[in-house]
Length: 402
Image (cartoon, rainbow, N blue to C red; front, side):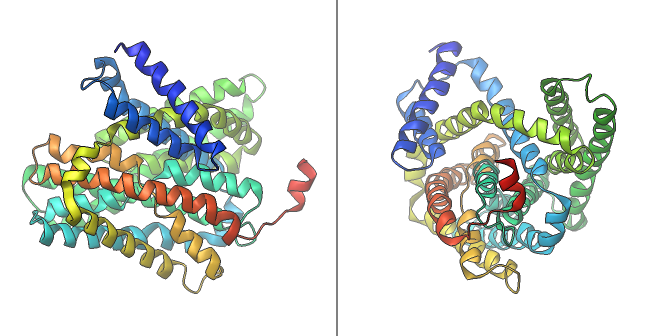
């Protein structure tokens, strides 16, 4: 199969299955995942070399679009209101699930502690590709606005994802060298987060100042091009510095909204259109990466580890939202919204195996199973639970814009 035919198959197939599942009142992205599964199962064993080389960039580009949209959708005033809850939701569920899966894989599969830890945090990452667009959509419709539930989930899930990736990368380096350094384990993640945020802050302020000055001279499409290319460079710099560059990208979007709101709205509108293509490509590629035979061979023990992780994450969300402004129904919705896994597991699940680390096949199998189990549950949970568990609120600004 040629590269051109493969791309057409991904785009048209993803679009068709997305529309089909939408007609069945199911999430469109679930249809895209199914399309990818079918292509990966029934397609050729070897894909065109161009697609194999381009796939990591396409996934990263989609993540950039997602996190920029997340940053451009969070106002400072709203974040101040839910900042404490969002902060707890960014850390507590991820840590509880990561540690739980780490212990389970250590004793069930007898993996080294460093490998068990990177496995735990690879599985702990919630999928921003699922959560961010869903929360932006619910917020736009007015669900959960009274207590800003979508915004808290939006901010918390984005940072949760970055934290999990940062810890994974940290312990991946340790597992590769065969040495465990306590100081690096304790300080590596905070340093990576700070180093990742700083370029986003600087880039956000500089872009906001320049866009305000040259607003009429630069078209909205050109602004999006500039922001996207700077974001790609931030990711590359993050790879070199081993920093949390994705958090810097979200920070850049947040600063643009604060310092150049009109420009931020222009960029957000364009990114929403780009996401139509990026969403199809991302979720079909994720589905293509799922090897059902590998998942089947993993057996019930891998499912047990995933279930223990989901239980720990749900407990973490319940703890994080305790004594908050959220009511019981809203807290239950937060649990549902924090379940789906897809993007990070598809991107990182095969890395330990490629590096020759012990248990690489088991880790890949658990990543595959995590996608196959949690993505449908989370997608349907958000789709069904949102309108039923969240209050519908119409604000004056919404009425004025109609």
